[in-house]
Length: 277
Image (cartoon, rainbow, N blue to C red):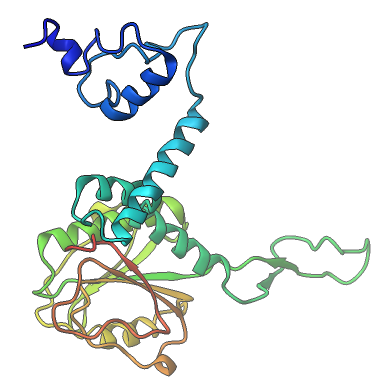
């Protein structure tokens, strides 16, 4: 047996007395301390003022380069896609956006892009008012009405309803409306309707079956008429025709539907579930 086992295994004594070229060959063969925690003589050691090491941007560049090489190896069949390294490479190169943040951003977009010039009021003087002239009304910016529809049918499990409450909580924070957020709950018809200011005020009444197309048509009869509908459901429902709904529709799916067809293409869809759920 060799006298220095650390030398044989690439330990602290490995590489002593070798030239730079021989050290480079040994480093390529053995690797570094990242695999086993044993310091190698060709490594620079802990960062210091004299040798601060790589900057954060350089580290990120190296990580991305290695991840791309791993993905290329998977594409060539040299590495199985189930390998932990392949999974880490995918997570680094293709990070998933937080679905609730994506949903909140899309809700704001649908509301802020609502068409309409506004309305007029005599409660405030117009900026174009002339002294002694005819009283002119001022223009006020409309507050677009968004109505949230929560599927409370029997297929909606506790986890689905929990995601619905979380989405509504984000909506309350991102869309402060002095009238409160209009929330409709039900399965085949509206079972509860309220303007809420806190998600704890929502009454999740079980509606039995599922026919959200009926509830969406009923929602369009609200006064004032909604400019956007946010539908939170597991997707196991029927859908209305596009000409029946005059508002923008955003669907938040709590999980993959087991048997129903996906929402129509004219609806905007956000998945609140992971791909494997």
